[in-house]
View (tube, rainbow, N blue to C red):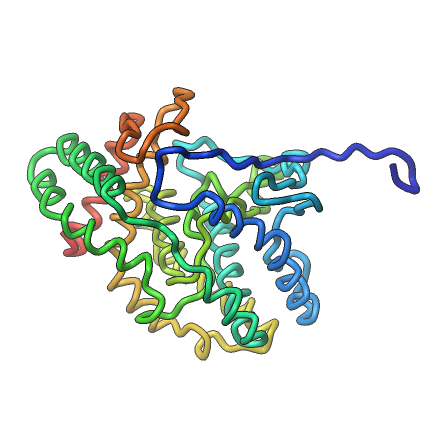
Length: 339
């Protein structure tokens, strides 16, 4: 009840689901990360953007979380009431959506760089301490083998041999990429930046706004991890051939404009030359991550309860669109000399 009378409050409650046999991460840790960004970090982000006078339509925004949120249950505003939705999980999103999502990613990374510059003590204690807690154990390795060998057999021919040869390299390199906080420029990273976690609002059938959700895997690491995963999880080979350079330009144009609100120069904070070097050096991260994440990205809607399964026990029976997407990824990396 308000001063203007009764108002309906529509909420979305996100409850922690115990995963009995998955030991690659601690559920309490990942939910604490999300609780932190929605109850503490959002205040810092808002304060900094207020002080800099960032226009409402150019801010990095988060859904509203309500008092009473805890590690066990996060209470959010219901974004569907504001018109937000996700596209079909297996669909290729429209170009306009991808552009909006890349711009939002640049602002997310940008506000992290702003915190680093203007709040160094807070950044050191609260942001740089957000480590990747993932345990790359035998369970994870068995899932990698399952997905990679399934893909090798599905695609066959010379690609089959290349995937089989790449598997031990991927198992060795991926944890090093994921936990690297010293050899490359780092900031706050989402770590699960894909269309399912970037909601969209449309007007007259056109995407006009996006909202990032699901920060459970958030950590301090290389921003290229977010960019590469998003690109390969969201696009086709044909699209990348036409638009990848444009999206990279858009990321940097947005990051540069956003940092200017805070009187920061992108060349001092995150030079394009450094981005391009790490992009080239880390490009196979995009293949490794997207291929193993396919167990979730392309899973058919069977309603299977996975709470009592280990990673290695997760079934990998991807939707039929997987073959075309996977072939596109592999051809990209063969063409680039990574396989």
